[in-house]
Amino acid sequence: MRATSFYGAWAQGSYSLDMHPIVMYNGCMSEKEKGTKSLSIRFPAHILEQMKEIAKRHNRSLAGEVLTALEEHIKRNQKGR
Image (cartoon, rainbow, N blue to C red; front, side, top):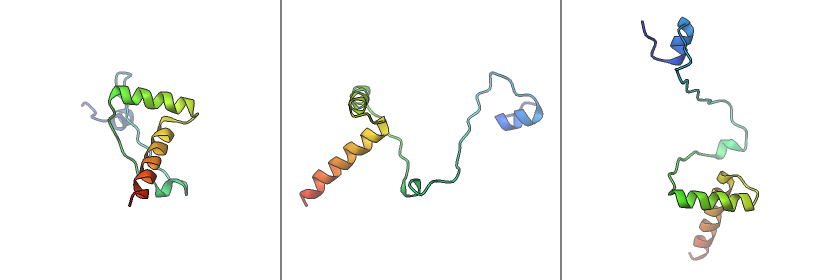
């Protein structure tokens, strides 16, 4: 009998190296993380590379640079209200 999941295969002792387990963690969030939501965005390659370069110059992670850029954009647009 062929197992369809990593955990099923592991439990049956039939796990092989050609299987690729996907493990998702949904543990307790810190107080800081409780007010956050996640979002997946696809960027054109040239924009992503430019954002990576800017993040490196600012000593930020890519995610931190994207958040900073979005926050600045929102502030500029709220002033015009």
